[in-house]
Image 1 (cartoon, helix red, strand yellow):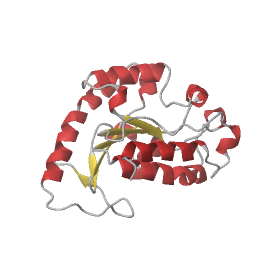
Image 2 (cartoon, rainbow, N blue to C red):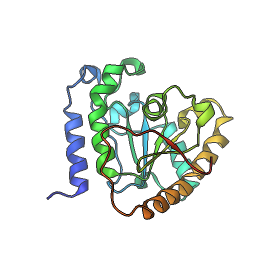
Image 3 (cartoon, rainbow, N blue to C red):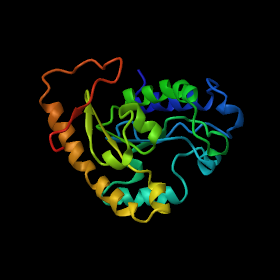
Amino acid sequence: MSNKSDELNAIAEQVRACTRCPLYKTATQGVPGEGPANAEIMMIGEGPGFHEDQQGRPFVGAAGKFLDELLAHINLKRSDIFITNVVKHRPPNNRDPLPEEIEACRPWLDQQIELIQPRVIVTISRFAMARWFPNEKISAIHGKAKRFGHLMVVPMFHPAAALHNINLKPVLIEDFKKLPTYIQESKKADAGVSAPQPAPQKDPPAEQLRMF
C-alpha cells in the first residue's frame, strides 16, 4: 500500500496530464500544488499566474516572498504547509476561472483535501472562499475561522494584495498570527470526539467558532 506522499505525487501527475477543461491547451503546464502530505495548514488560491505556469510551482515571485515572511511570524516555513489552487492550469491572460473550469478541477482539490486532511484551510482567493463562504465579503470575514465538520476554514486576503495596498500588510500579519490558535482549537475539538466520523459527501453547514 503506497503512503500518503506517494498518493499525493500520483494526484500531481494526473493533474499535469489533465484535459478535463480547455485550460490545458493554453497553459505551459499544470501546477498541482506542493507541500507535505501531513501538512496542518493548506492554502488555496485561485489559479497559477505567469511565473507559476512557467515554473510549475505555486506562489513564486514577490507574493511568494511575502508569504515566506508571513509564515515566519508563526515560526513556519513554506515547506511546512501545502499550497494549491482552485484551478490547476493558468487561465489565459490571468482571467478569472470560469465556473465550469472550477467544477472540472474540483475533484483534484477534493482528493488533495481528503488525503492531506489539514487542520486548517486558508482561502486566499474569492473563488476558494466562495466554496465555504458563498455571498460573503473578504473585508467582513478575513481572519475569522469557521468549522465545517472536522475542517476549519479561514478566509484571508491574498498576500499579493498587500503588495498593492500597504495597509493590508499588518492585517495579513495579524490574521496569520491566529493560525496556531486555530490549530490548537482543532486538536481540542478532535480530542473531544469519541470516534472518527465519516467524511460528509458535501460540505456541512458552518458552525461559528466560540471565539467569534
